[in-house]
Length: 142
Image 1 (cartoon, rainbow, N blue to C red):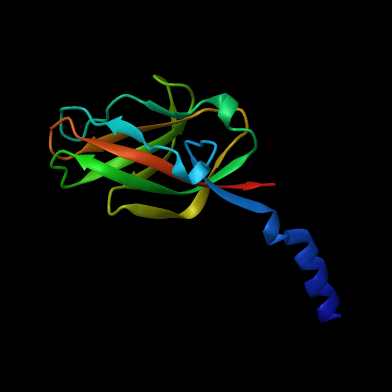
Image 2: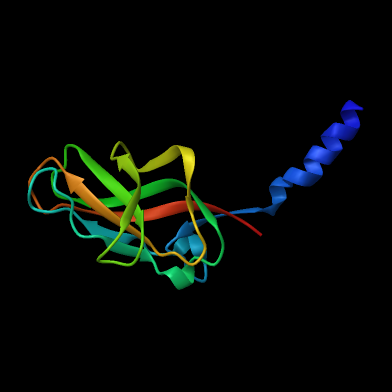
């Protein structure tokens, strides 16, 4: 009975049916350039929402599993990246990520519905117009 239960579970879960990727996407998804997200020139004040991917680019329900941060500009000692849904310059926050390293995996994936754009904004403790390049790590069904 246990063997039958395992086989049924394996058929239902089908881990091979999950595609890992990044936003923004390109023909070669992993090679996509990160999007530069600016902070405001006032400490702990976010910059404007920056478009990561337009709604037309979110072809299926997507789980955002983490964030890759690159090319920090400025002297940010502490910071946060906000992830949201919408179309820049508007957005609705769905996650906040403290800047603690180059890659941060979320303890629980954040869901983005198909056909909804994804945006990000950034804030730091410095009061300087810092920037960071952002890529979102994703998982979708095939």
